[in-house]
Length: 384
Ligand code: COA
Figure 1 (cartoon, helix red, strand yellow):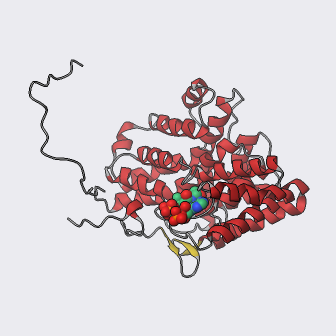
Figure 2 (figure 1 turned 90 degrees about the vertical axis):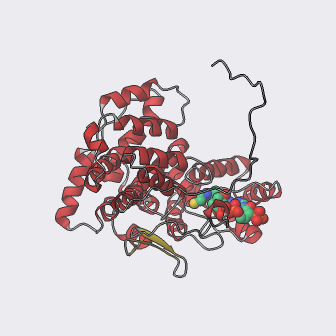
Figure 3 (figure 1 turned 60 degrees about the vertical axis):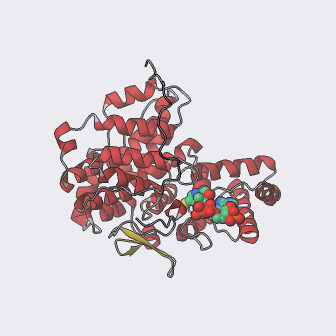
């Protein structure tokens, strides 16, 4: 057994994939051959989801059928909403969403859930993807005792998602930004959550189990939770005085050796994240329309300049997305659940790939504990 250990599995290649890669030389995220940033500029999130789940961009007939399928499957069973309403009020929506995802498995045909085929998994994953927005909006609204809104497919996937959260149709330019955010979040190779999903899928656990496992891994601030943390940071900077307080805010935290969430990345680390570069353009559009947003975007730039100068670190996607979602009016606790909704598309592709050529993922650990111990003589087993 090889004893070389790479903490955090840094640069360890653990799978072959046709889903995506981070092409560092060309500073591109390649998804099934396409540049993710180009996709974000030119197509809609459901097209990217089709690309991920079905392997190719849809023809116009496939587009219509896929959107119809997403719309037909989008509603939630009443029982799920009932359970969400009974959760303690201060449950984090990320926990509520994960709970609701688990609940949804109970509404599947048990035989279909146990079916180990790729086709059965694809059907279940499509249902998870379609229902994720309603489930996410309901997780937030039901906890607050607010009415849970039905999907509104006429508004499109992103528009209906915003409608269910905010209870009003949003302006086309806002929906377009939200759609771009979903695409930017849709897939990113073996991020911790996706890897977790592949580990769960490799045990032949059902697709719900794989997505729930991924949701658990996504929650932490070193991964998906970073968008929420970034949004909270901008709110704090604003309270502290806005643009003129931004540099000091960062310097104080760096002096305490704290991390600034929304910066750094295991794979990019000292390189720009192409998604952050793209989404900075959307921040510009907000700044041009609204003086308050312009002030927040100036804070963003000061934080970015300070981190570049002090640590040589670039923003990752979570930094602009935390601010953009705030500017769209999304509650901060919903930011990571929204990330999951989009990433389900990529997770689905990886779960299907894992199933198609499965081998249980089971690494080894280098044992550093004692050995040869035995219970002391006369040790009595506990009574429970
Ligand atoms: N703020 C301040 N310093 C940071 C940092 C950040 N966001 N990210 C990395 N660093 C520093 C570390 O302190 C460390 O410096 P040191 O060598 O002087 O101690 C160095 O960069 C390497 O960090 P390390 O934690 O070993 O890198 P990693 O590959 O294990 O971590 C992340 C990657 C993403 C977990 C890390 O960059 C991070 O915590 N970022 C903030 C959370 C975030 O935005 N996550 C979303 C990622 S898409």
